Image (cartoon, rainbow, N blue to C red):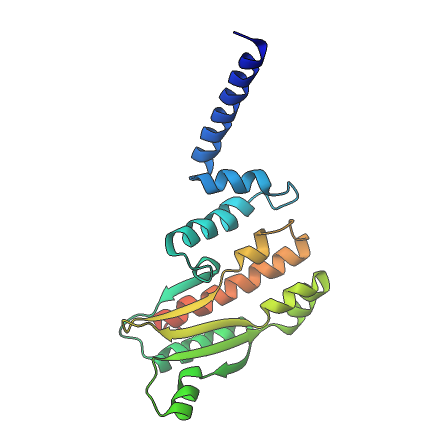
Length: 202
């Protein structure tokens, strides 16, 4: 057998070995492709906490928006006003400001005269933390203010949606310690508001 054939066999064996290893590690071919593309500058948890969960959700649903959010089901015995009261109470206790609401379904009903499924957006902000994040990167401004959406789906089930902050925290190069601490705190507070609102618990 010629030297060229031996070289090709060796290269093929190596490729299969790494392909299988990456397939097992990242639970899919997509993981292999992404892991070979991402820069080593990225956070060491970027694959496990951001890109693989997003990719798996995208492949399952075909919906990129579903791949970038966190949603929590609202308990059946919790009214919309209970959700609002709980979220407002938790936000106040956590020291984050409620900076506005958009009653979108109500607005459309007034415009069209037709009943709409419930949709309301709630906005929260910690101004000093927000400015610290923007000082690090102007692009963080697109995440401001933090938003939660209370929405009734087409089957009548209600959900609280918010952006998955893991993309901001772990998706790029590791954040400086002072900023990581603030980002994790904001995530904790928004999660507490979301979970508490869904259960009407405050």
